[in-house]
Image (cartoon, rainbow, N blue to C red; front, top):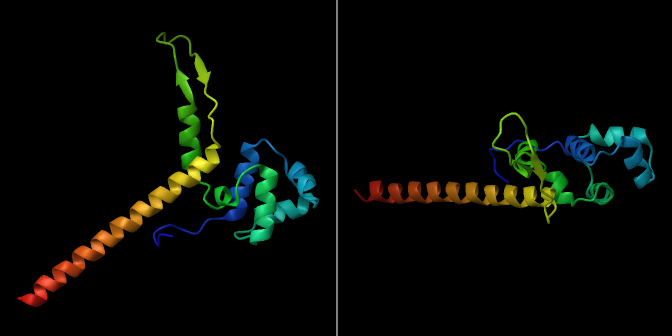
Length: 140
């Protein structure tokens, strides 16, 4: 994980994904066999143990990685790109709702991972450059 990124608030991610699924805390609590107050406590927690996270992910229909790597910006980007204005007449807006053949949250996790790998490669390239320059300076 990049040292530049701030730690994720897992509970907040759970809450946002639950809301995107149009699910109330009570419904998630019932699916997990726990109280609504426990769901509220989970959503207010920055961290959650892996076993509970896996249970919550299953109840929400996503992977644990999707919860861990959830990002509002990426979801909004996907949602914005899901609607296409097909009208050239500015007085009406006709939209086509495109249903992806993939889980958008899984795609977000994939994109996040690719971005993280890119940052790691950039950092390594900078380290290699510094090492190379240090060798040149020492050689003089």
